[in-house]
Amino acid sequence: MTAIGVQAQRPLGQRKPHRSFFESFIRTLIIVCAALAVVLSSVSICDGHWLLAEDRLFGLWHFCTSSNQTGPHCFRDLSQAGVPGLAVGMVLARSVGALAVVAAIFGLEFLMVSQVCEDLHSRRKWALGCVFLLGSFVLSSAGLLSFAIPLRNQVTLTGFTLTFWCQFTASFLLFLNAVSGLHTNSITRPWGPLGKF
Image (cartoon, rainbow, N blue to C red):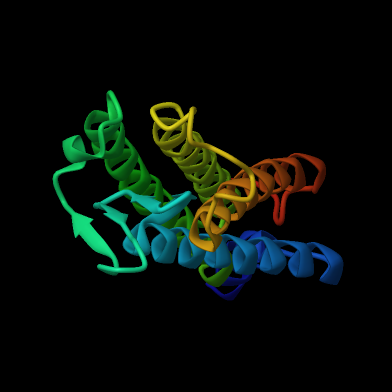
């Protein structure tokens, strides 16, 4: 009975994942950067003020006009801005932007679980988390384009607000982390043998 118990424990001992410090550091850095991207994107969408064009401020949720005499006036009815397709574009930008945040959160969860609960499926969870981040990047980019295309006549690099650049940075981080995570997964060796019980 003792011999059988020892033989049964050996494969389990061989299954224990082993990773180098450098690989662990890279994976931790990817998780931290992905979390930063989620925070930046969430703040950017909640604030929503993305473009300042002369005396008008365009956002995902409303637009505002300002003057020295009356001060700022904001309107939730985006059709009053007089920009064709603005209302539809903002609805699309809000929708895909929110979906991008949700996808990034799911991806971040998979990345974290793959590191905390290390087993034979950890690498698959990591790869799935990276796929979610890549999908979040696609959705985030679609949101940025949905915002910029209707306002192409008003768009200037200096007109974009800090929250727009936060969303742009978040989109870039999502892409960078997704590609880096998939590449890291492909070049590192498996953490443990896939032997049978």
